[in-house]
Length: 462
Image (tube, rainbow, N blue to C red; front, side):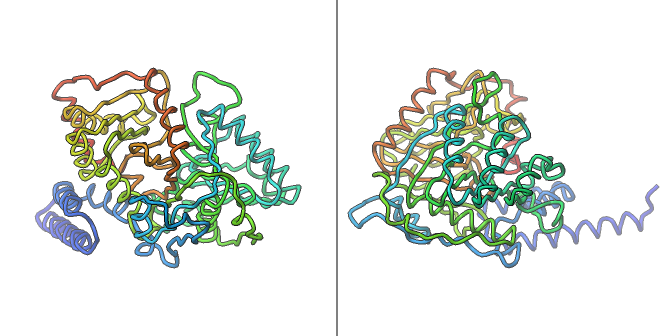
């Protein structure tokens, strides 16, 4: 039986732990709602709350991990003064590079299309292949891609593969599929390795950026990871619905700079330097602004631009996302936009691969449906695509989900597409999803609603 002195010591220790943790919390730059939520959690559930705080509180690398610099994208082939976009200007005000002109944009509409275009892109490489992915599987698709990478490395092409250590933790422990690449002269590295640097690795700061950059002037990006779930030469029942795009031109150079920043900071090796004549080439008429987001970007520029876009929208806001867990500000913005008469559609999978995230999203979706926002559930298969359409002025494509984890914690990258022809291509792709969707979220019991609201509190961790 616990004696009085032991109980007194335990109570005093708990009190001091709470006091120190809350003291640290008050030194952080957080929204009042976030500070209050953390404070209540720490006091109500001290040891669980403090553990969650230690794991998930930090967001910006310059305050957490030393010697990591902020991303600074160079101003390359920027649009001329006549181009007028308030969102583009807002992103510039956040010290990001402006939109680039002279790009060629092509949408990869599903996993079959993405696979064919990715293989062709890799086979075309003459000087370099840089790949960043959250998940790199071990299956027939990844074996084909590794075989191409090995072939290219043997031909003298610089091949670098950056894989997130948490997203592909099994691969880090058993990397046999990547050994031939290393033998051929290529390199692979696990971002924030939990094996090599267990005390420096941050579980809540993961590299979710998806980029395949070839010869420094072409990139495939979007939602796809490298696995047969996302890419396949043939259609099959387990293939997810996903979306990616290929960009050629100055915008691709910004993706290369983002990859260089991540690789050289984490892998501690340098990439080769290549002539930058590509900057002078015109590949097409697309105007694209590449926007990195995450701990290595000082501001929350992506979140700010999305919030401003919702408030400025006049006709439509269509959001395609596998996981939906916005914060209060985004929820308020969507509701206000609906009250102004803007058409709002949220397209999300009927059942995702994350059951807890599905429970958490339901509370948000019910609140929006109450305000007459249209909720569409993609049926029959998992949908992993990420896209956002704002009027006919902007399409946003990339790796970011519509949730707090993507906006405030993960390393992400998206492209803001400003060219009307490209926006129309994205609009038509989203419209084709409608026929495969079920409309509206169904009513459930009060107990289920209470469960949904409980998990809403933990949405950033899911």
